[in-house]
Length: 467
Image (cartoon, rainbow, N blue to C red; front, side, top):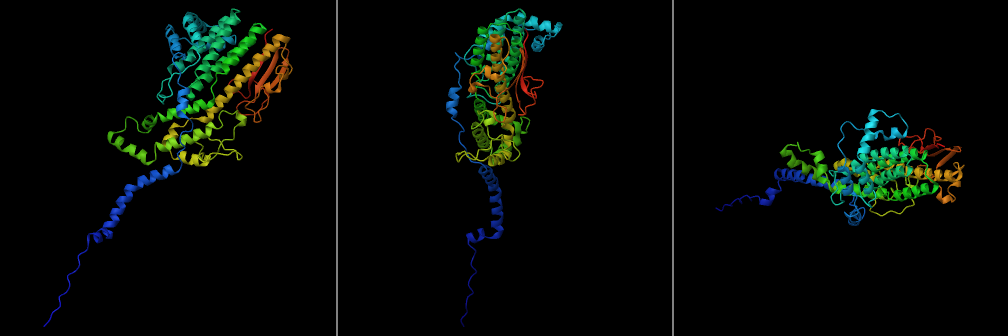
């Protein structure tokens, strides 16, 4: 009798076991958990392309590296070292009050005496202001921790120069007064060279102080016409030292490139526990940082550099997309743009997702407003000096600006006016005029209560010349 053997059951192969759902599903979950952060990083970086360098960084660094032989830094520091230690509380900011003719009290007299006692330091400072250049931090080393001690010290010397100019004016020595006023003006231009935004803001503060003092000196000085013409020439030469806005934006870009660790320290302070410090940088990495920061920042700088050096009335309107954490210009429809220049909408979207960008980006709007006001003060000041030269030649101020500026191309433009109109000028009497710009708000309020202060309704000068 024949019997049939039942075939032995086939054993599952290794591949079958690997494909079993009980094995595949947990493995896929683990793989997805590992891949998810990398996918998220890829997504974050896909929001914005890499723009490359927004300008020729190497050429910029070379151009803004100042040789020691031209640099006023060491002479300024040497002058500051000559200052004597005050014996009491000295307030050198009283210079404005002195020019306004207030009665001199004990505190003001102490400041005047302190200035007189430090004549050697001020002479050394004035000499240093004639140096052709100034740079406190080299562009290869600038970062958020860069110290600008000498730049900040210029304020103290500027206040002393205001007092020294007043002393000379009170003694009838207008040429001596002019020397100290020009020293302040030169210093205000020097500190702006080769620096970041804080350098420009310090320079603007010094320039404001200088301009206001020169206007007060103009209504009483007794220089001859030729002496005042020479003073104007020196003022105009000094004003030519003013750097373009784009230089500061480029320097800010370099500062960000050199400040990656500093920015991360803002998010992860030194008090962060050691275990967290080891993990948190990976969290940064998976958020696309710092590449996302550099990409967004590069696009913002590229957008800004196209327009910031134009007068305000010639710049495109500001973008209003997203939360406006960037200060971007809309691109004119008629303008052909490079494909790498993204739209403001895309840049804003990427900026909102970058943790480091929100820590790093400069306040371009307020900075541009300060520079625009400074440029108008420069124009108002030069125009006021030219009006005074006309008065010296003709015995009274002109009826119109066209009597001073014989060519329409020479008439002073109000950059803060939406259409770039001519500065407003009204002659109130033979020795009295009002000269003004519409100011930061772009609205002409009739030239009432004119000052050179940034908060002035209309930015300008009311000159009532002393006989």
